[in-house]
Image (cartoon, rainbow, N blue to C red; front, top):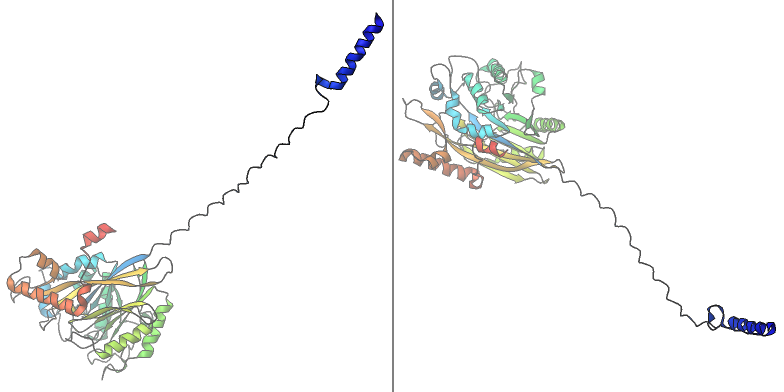
Length: 418
C-alpha cells in the first residue's frame, strides 16, 4: 500500500509546481504599464507687496494783508479825540476783520510820531502816539517808515517815531536810528509759516536833506533825491536785495514810496524800477504815495516765478478831499510754499474795497472808513452816500481789476475754516 501513496503524492507535487504558487498558470499575464503620475505645476510665491509711496507733504499756505498810506491830517486828528485819547481804532474799524484774519499785515505809516501836543498835519506831519498803538490793536505787524515825510520833524522826529513803534510792538522798515540798525534794516517775518524778507524805500524826503551826521537815516532809492528824482541807485538796490536773499527767506517783499501823486496809473519810471526789482530777486512789490488807487497785477516773471506788484493802494486813512483820495482797499495776498519742492510764490490776491467817509464839518464822528460791499448789502445809506459808495466801487474795479474783487470773508468765518 505504501508505494501507491508515494506515486500519488509525487503526481500532486508535480501538478502544484507547474501551476506555480496559488495554482495559476506559470506564465503571468502582461500588466500594462500605468502612465507616470503627472507632477503638480509649481506655483511661485507672490512677490511681497511694496509699501505705498508716502503722500507728498502738504503745501504751506499763508495770507498777507496790505493797506495803503496811514495819514493823519489835522481834521482827522481832531476827530479822533474822544475826550480821553485819540481813538483811531474807531476810524479804522471796518478794515479790522480783514487785517486781523491775515497771518501778517503791513501798512505805510506816512506821518511822524514826534511827540506832542501840539500835533500837525500837512506839510510837516506829527501825529499822536495813539495811532501806533491802534494800528497794532487792529492787527498790523509792520510799518513802512520810509516816505517823503520821514524827516518832517528832523532826525529826532524820525528816531522818536521808531521808539514809539517799538513800544507799540510794531516792526518797522525803511528808516534807522543808527548805522548798525541801517545795516540790519531788513525785517525777516514769519508769515503763517512762510518766511518773508521785507525791505523799505522812498524816492525822496520833500527836499529835506538827510542829516550829514546820520546818512543812514532814510532808505532812499534815488541817488538824486534832492533834485530830479529820476536816477535809481541800482547798486544799492541790488546789494540790499542780495543781502535779503542771503538770509534764506522763502520770499522777498519790497515796500516802496514812488510815482506821481493823484495819478491812477503807474508811470514808466515805476514800471522800469519794478522790472529791475523783480530781476534782483523781489517776489512782491508794494507801492504807495499816489494817494489814489493804482493797478495791481500777478505776473509770471521771466525765470518762471510768479510775482506780484501793487503800484499803490491809495490812502488807508486820511482827510484829503481831492478826487479818489477817499477810495482804497485792503489787499490780501495768498502765499504758498510747495511741500515737495520747498519753493514759494504768490498764488493769489484779492481786495476788499473801502471808502473813507467824510461827514459834514461839525458832525461827530466825522471820519470813518467804510466797507463798501458791507454797506451796500446792508442798505440804509441815503441816496448821495450810496452814489459815492457805488462810484468808489467802480473805481476800485476799474483800477485794481474786477477779477481781484473777491476778498475773503470776515475774520470769524476765516478763523472757523482754520
